[in-house]
Amino acid sequence: MEVILLERVNKLGQMGEVVKVRDGYARNFLLKRGKALRATADNRAKYDGMKADLEARNLQAKGEASKVAEKIEGKNIIVIRQASEAGQLFGSVTVRDIVAAFETDGVHLDRPQVQLDAPIKTIGKHTVTVAVHPEVEVEITVTVARSQDEAERINRGEDISTRNEDRDAAAEAIAAAGEFFDPEAQHDEVEPAPAAEEK
Image (cartoon, rainbow, N blue to C red):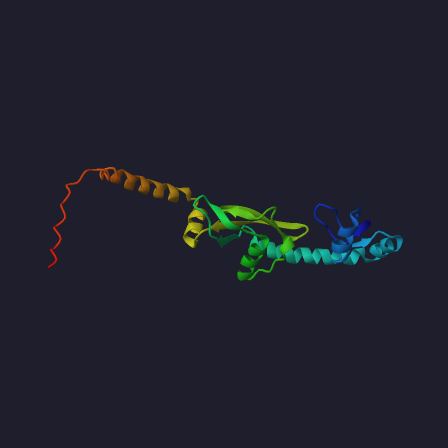
């Protein structure tokens, strides 16, 4: 189906362009959300009549989005999750988690604005793009850690794998100390006391 875009749509086109898309995408997303019109002669004339109004609304929305972008650009969101010693999460951090973290900071984002290719499944710092407007994108950092202390260490640039190395060193020290104790050594056996005779 051919549609006329009423706003810039990522990876599709600019406002006013006529593009060919799949019928389901057009009906269920573009037309339903008011992002496009069917490319008929009547709708082309209708678009020409409302072009100036659409551009003014787009400019206003872009200005508001720029204010939000300034507020969140470079922001570091900390998400605490359980993870293995190797840093693999028991679960994942999704777009929903990132949006919820922003909500606690008083910033409202819609899930489609957060561009995350795949859920985050490891401990560490991850860069995520947020498109607050089709023409305004910012990058934020999502720090995933097992605790607030670990998140602070990650943000300072410390290598959190040293924590595991410290544990390994402690285990080796205990094992070395255990070499002095030989469980197979022969000990002097004490003969048991004779049992009391029954009368």
